Length: 451
Image (cartoon, rainbow, N blue to C red; front, top):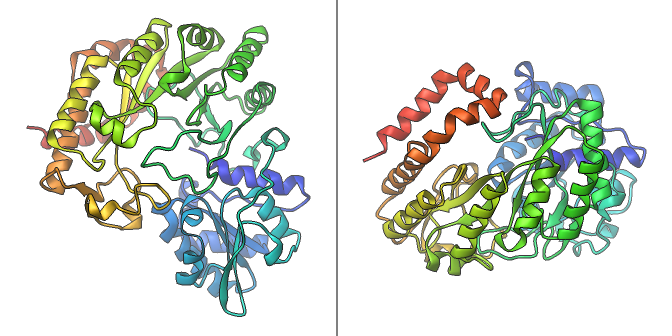
C-alpha cells in the first residue's frame, strides 16, 4: 500500500510553497533499499526537516535511520508522527534522543507550521524539548476540513502506481490505488488505537471523491480503488451521491470498501454494485457471541450473517475480517469462529493475529489477561505477541491459527469459487503463477501446522 499519510502531508506542504521529497522505505526500488541510499538522498536534497511516519512495528527501524541522519547531518531536525508516536506522546522524546520533535494527532497543519518557522510552543499537538525538558502541547483543535486538502502527492512517489499491488484476488482490474476518504471512527472497540483522531469522525464529500478517482484514472491509469476507511458507508447520503455520479459519468473503474453491518442495506448494496463496487469487507472479528460483546461495539452475529447474504445477493463479493487471540479466547471460541466462517460461505477472508497496541483501550490492562511480549518489531498483526489465559501456549495458538486458515482455503466453498475468480482477476492469477514457488512454500507451512 502506498504511504497515503506521508503523501497527504507532502501535498499540503507543497501547497504551502515548501519543497519536499518522499522516500518510501517500505517499497523502494530494489537498488535503493539500504540506509546509505537514504543518507545520500538527504545529502542531495539538503532538507531542514526529515519527517518519519511510523506504526509500532516500524518505529525502531525508523529510529535507527534518525540516529544515522543526526550523526551525519546534525543540522537536520528529525520529526516523528503517526499512530505509535501519538499514543505514547512525551515518552518518545524522553527515551529516544535522536528524535527532535514529535507530532501527536493530525499532522498537516503542525508540519506546515514547523516548516514556516513557528515557535514550538505555539504548535498544537507538538512534543519538543526546551532547556533539556520534554514538553507536550495540547492536542490540535482546528482540525482540517478534508475537502479543502489537496489530493495526496502521488507524483512524489517513485514507481506509483505500478510498484504497488493489492492483495491477491482482491481486485478485478489493474493498476490499483488506495483512497482514505475519512478520518476517525464513530465506534470504540477494545483493540483499536484512536490516538491520532481521538473521537472525531470526518469524511470527504462525494464530489471530492469523484474528482480524486477521476484524477487517479486520468493521470495515472488507475483502474481499481481500495477505499481504506473503517466505515465507508457510515454516511449513507455521500455514498449514494458518489454512486450516482459514477453512474452518470462512468470512469471505467471498480472499487472495494469496508462497511459495518448496521450501515448497509439491499438498496445501497445494489447501488454500490451498479457504480462499480466489486467487494465489500465486514469487520466480524469473532464468531463467538461473548467475545464480540466483550470487544466490539454494536456487534450482532445474526446481523452479520444477514449482511453477508445481502452483499452476495447484490452480486458483490463478501470478505470477512477476523481476529484471533483476543483476551478471553479459548480453543472453543476459536472453533466456534471457524464454524461460523464456514457457515457464512464468504468469498474471501482475512484473519489477523491480535496485537495490543499502545493507545487502544485494552492495552492498559493487557497483562492481566494473559502473557504479553511487548516487542515493537513484532507488533504488526502477523505475530502472536499476546497469549490469552485460555490458550496453553504460543505454539498451540499458532497451530490453531494455521488450522483455521487451512480450513477456509481448502474448503469446498473456496475451491468451488477459485476457477471463476482467476478469470475475474486475471492480474492476480498471473501474479500467482509468477510467484508459484513462494505460494507452495507458504502452503506447506500451513499444512505442517494442521492436525
